Image 1 (tube, helix red, strand yellow):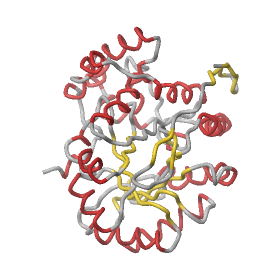
Image 2 (cartoon, rainbow, N blue to C red):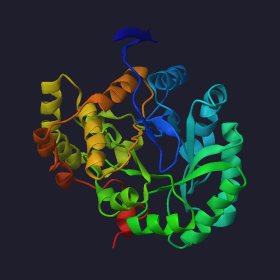
Image 3 (cartoon, one colour):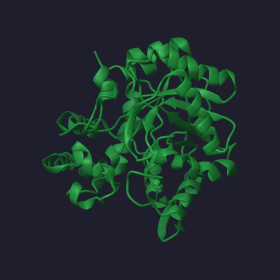
Image 4 (cartoon, rainbow, N blue to C red):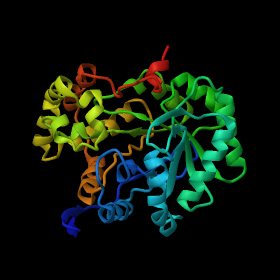
Length: 349
């Protein structure tokens, strides 16, 4: 192990992370990916130069799955990634998403799943990313008013046309995953999964394991709460940070949820690790219990945090440690979002 200085941050350089298959017959990718959303929006101002160094550091560490969406910054995140994509197109697996419709005034407009919307969306993403093919194309959210056969059928057309290589879904139930898979093979399911959020285990995890679909957990660090960085989340977040309006970060919920982190902190201290590393290690091991391939995509804009996150892939928690962590999700105060209507949890039977 050596040390290197990236910008003003000193990070430890370790061996590259392991690789896993992204879905049955899919490409080999690093066992941890990088969520790029925060580089453009939602978590306050970004130092673009540092964010670009983070992309390079990720690739050097063996991270090859880079995740974005047309909704992030209303296309700005895809544009931000375009130079990196051009420089490393054959080395990376590029994932983007369609389905969350936003207006020019930053307002949320709804969900677009119909065939014509899918076709318009992919052309926009291809243009902004500066590429002629997307490796993994997700339906970001499900609109129950549009038949899955129409949405996934339209996505399958993109595969046949060579614009997309593999298909993914986000925030669907196990029944929806099976229904979609019957139309066209699904490579990956992206849903929230962490010590704080285990809705996905109700039905989707079992279906993914059965079908050979890789699970790509987003927010595996509970939007940063599981790093233990907050004592009063609302007060400590900048005015532009959307987490100020998330139920789990607000008022008494934040205080109660902070107290739940005590076993995470204890395990981290005993292992000379960070709470975030323990939380990420839990996600990797929880997937093994279900016989799943898992590629979490924690987001970060800093090389030092990237190094910390990838180092978590080499932590193996004991049965006793896992038992200490098991009760946490059942005690979390507040929903994942202020409005849960577009999540899989709202459609579980």
